[in-house]
Amino acid sequence: MLEIITAQNILYEIKERQLLHIPQVAIAADAKIGIVGKNGTGKTTLLNILAKQILPTSGSVHADATMAFVPQLKAACSTMSGGEWTQAHLDRVLSQHTDVLFLDEPTTNLDIDHVRKLEKTLRRRHGALVIVSHDRAFLDALCTMVWEIHDAQLNIYKGNYSDYVRQKEQEVQQHHNAYEAYMSKKRQLKEALEIKKAQSSKGYKEAQKKLLCPKRSKQGRDRISQKNKRSSIRQQRPWKQEWRIWKRLKNRMKSRQSRCVSLEQRD
Image (tube, rainbow, N blue to C red; front, side, top):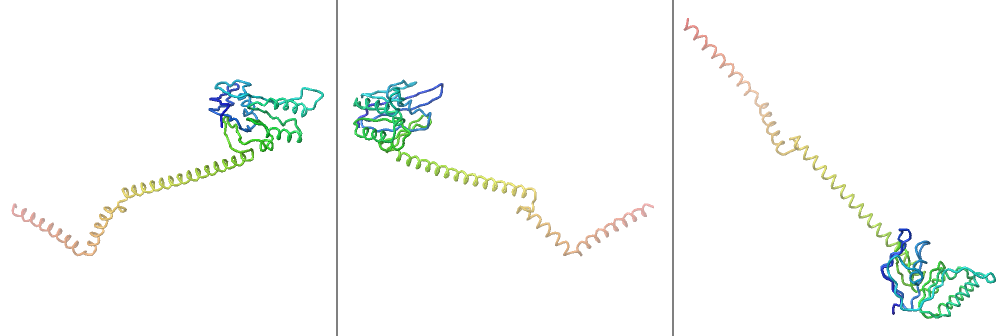
């Protein structure tokens, strides 16, 4: 469908606070759009910018269409109730048959009967419709697209308000699932790292023990085994030690006798 209003790089700031930051958005000739968001997010501001009632801080709006804008209305006639005055003003605007109609909270002062009458009138109307409203039933009855303002950004959803709510619930669930998966993976990686550190620390300690305690190394065990073997052999052959002792004593006696003979000869 032909786009009759386009907005580029819309930035709107209030006292250095960024209220709106919308790179690009467009309105088609048959669009039925509901703008939603928390209070103070910039719904009415965006409506005014698109209707060229105010200028953005930066960016541009191009319109190739006739437009009518109905702001939030307050009764200005003492002889008429708020609902009657609002309905009269809406009737005058609707009679203009513009390409685009911008409505800001049109059901505020209307009773149920007048709201139903306005719904029927707007459904019969040809052209684009852009509405800011807290009346969910009203948006459900008229809108085929929802624009949500969140954190200065514009998110677009197809369908009426009920469809928008379902899509938001799905998004929340998907974000929750993604977060749970992320946390689970994070826990697994943390546990794996702790196990790796523990294994590394255990291996280091075992290596240190092998260096400090030869018994734990193969080379050390071999040395101890040989030493024990020699000790065992000695214990098994006590006569050999006695024989060595006797031989040493005998050699000493011979040495002493030789010295004595030598001394006698000198005398």
